[in-house]
Length: 79
Image (tube, rainbow, N blue to C red; front, side, top):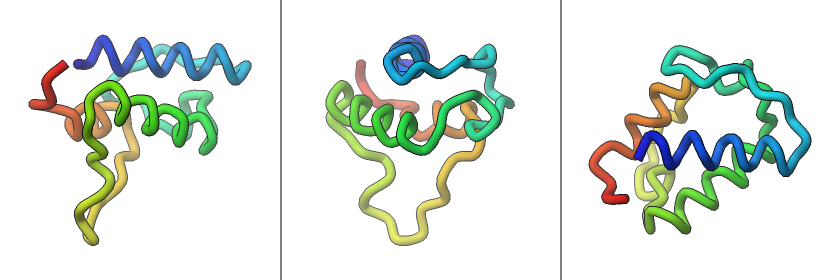
């Protein structure tokens, strides 16, 4: 799952002409080189791949600020 997400992060960054910092659990998403459009594209692609949108279904959802938090949202999702 983690490798799939990282692969998609790199694809989106390349397609959008963004330069990425090395992805790590403690890297803040806003400091990674991705902008909000890139993040929206990433989430849509991950929903297509995994068939789940972890951002819907809960009114008290806390959005991830680091990649580690993002990876945890997708833990247990079959690849």
